[in-house]
Length: 153
Image (cartoon, rainbow, N blue to C red; front, side):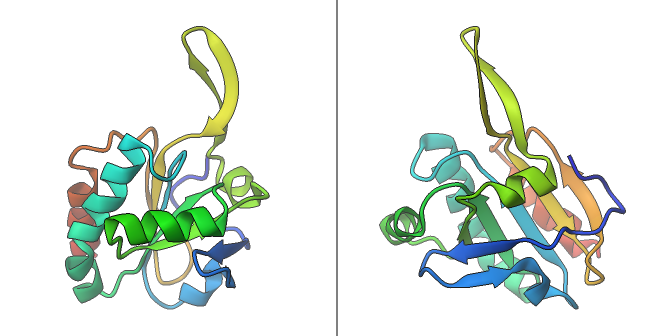
């Protein structure tokens, strides 16, 4: 997993409307990027809703929020519409961003091993360097913790 001080890799994602973009479009301002396993599942829904609830505070600090999963753009659009989400949802169908950030990991559930996205959040500085990493995120209270870090910039 990428660590504090490392540069954000050049990756291209697709937003919920099917438009391709690179994370470097946010260069020059801080950015929050969070990885989550799957849209419209309980933990991922709560996480997106928590970030949405604080979206105005992040916007006031000038910090966009991008949530990344391997879901197709159409599923992300449906997810955003269903819950009124106000964060940028991005599709990484190829897994290139997950690999580059180090969030594509071996997981285990009931003794069964499989590959999946580790829930993680990255606070990225205006210069494109990672300022802080939250690996293995627990959803409850996480968005508020990230906002506190953003407000400390």
